[in-house]
Length: 249
Ligand SMILES: Cc1cc2nc3c(=O)[nH]c(=O)nc-3n(C[C@H](O)[C@H](O)[C@H](O)COP(=O)(O)O)c2cc1C
Image (cartoon, rainbow, N blue to C red; front, side):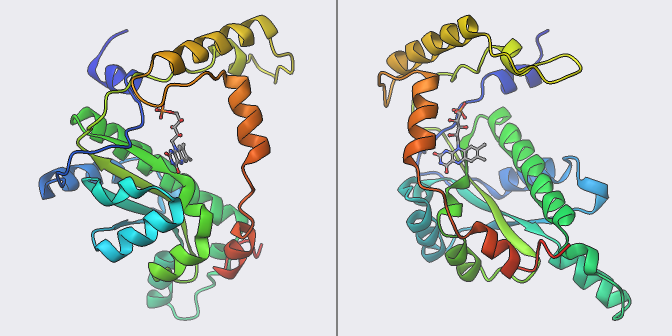
């Protein structure tokens, strides 16, 4: 199997260094169209996308994420799970409409799913246009600051950032785990094939040695150990979900 869509998908790698070149309005329009055409839970389109262009707002993102490159990206998008807009729509039709469902765990998940699908569609579209980018969950480092700076109302939550631009770094594709380790038939398979895992560790080790920037000596299992044991858990996510009006049901 070989077609342009598959080539784009198989060629994905995150880009964190960009040429100082803003995306054109035409490119942004196309990217938004790709994002909007993604699947959306129950056809409720429960997300919003904020283009972050004000240097002060970009500085907030840089401070929270710890990534300065966001300021030189061609475009930065903040993706927000959003049940607020749908509540407003319902209330404008009927001020007494029962909107309690929008405060549920289910609807928080739906908003997060919608963001994830829209964002992946946008990233793949960008890559198909010769651009590159990186998804940024590091906005969770301080969700209170993001909520305040971007004036996010009740029933919204910042889910991910996306930095896009013209790539200014050489990189190679990061190899993924052997499919049989993550793909099961009919029921969950609890037995990890150690030989396959060792083999994958070697592949990841080779990748880190070969990649043009940030090369180091690391395997997948080393990475898991250090990531999971050394990174502090971001603690205020759950309270902020609740403060924003979610998880009531
Ligand atoms: C939910 C999510 C959050 C991520 N957050 C960050 C981030 O904050 N900063 C960053 O540099 N990369 C981030 N990434 C990118 C991953 O590090 C990257 O996708 C992974 O290492 C695989 O590398 P690749 O995308 O180059 O194949 C994130 C990816 C996902 C899916």
